[in-house]
Image 1 (cartoon, rainbow, N blue to C red):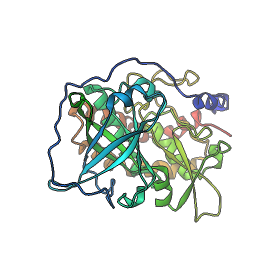
Image 2 (image 1 turned 60 degrees about the horizontal axis):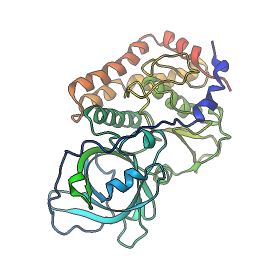
Image 3 (image 1 turned 60 degrees about the vertical axis):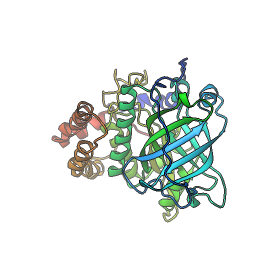
Length: 361
């Protein structure tokens, strides 16, 4: 049946997960040393998202102070160095702080916000702006796998939606300038800021909880909902703008919103051990798919479904070619995505299933 019954859960989704996890930073046994690459030049005009190759970065700051103050989320001085090639690096002082809600309280090492100073030698598009950095959370192989799977989710969403965040996998040397013995190396995900997202798409960001899925462009709304269904993600809401940013095109006259999804660690594709569906949903595990899109007529839904059908080989190829994830983990991701395409083989049945879960507003 159509789930007008479950509409109250959108208010539950608005609630921020909280938790406690008392632990000192782990994995400090991974030592690194920074090798000089000549005199680093300022980060001036460097494009963080110009390549899909992992970016090599060094962040030097007081690691203990950041971790200790992660719930206060205050800014600290740091130095950022980015390796351009084997002989050239770019460097400059920045500010960093812990960010996020659940992961900031749960992780032994929090996600980070990079804030670029408004300087003459600043990277021009980022002067005075920020970049999000999704970090490893805990220095264990399983959490590294989670991060790499989430990065793949961003890559797959880029295939589905032209309105999507640019991301870049990074290998980050974290240098504790007070206690070098606490330094370590880990993967991270850089995410462009919302201003860059909006400017790149000739749009503006709307921060209002007056919007519902009915106020979104129907095709873009369906792409987001169907993608989240494909990867088993129910941790999002347009109404609360929870893991959703809303754009409105500067060119359009309709005033319809364009939802942009992000933050996929609660998806079945990533399948973190700490993730769970909301109790109000009729599913028991995040690996159980549940559709949270609008109720649409078959003729409205079929064209978007066919877009996904046409992307199957490209999606599976993106997963197969991702060399940084282990073979076993890649097989898990491929199997999960193939589960969606097994349903797609019978479109009429799939549409009936989606319409049995959809929401009316």
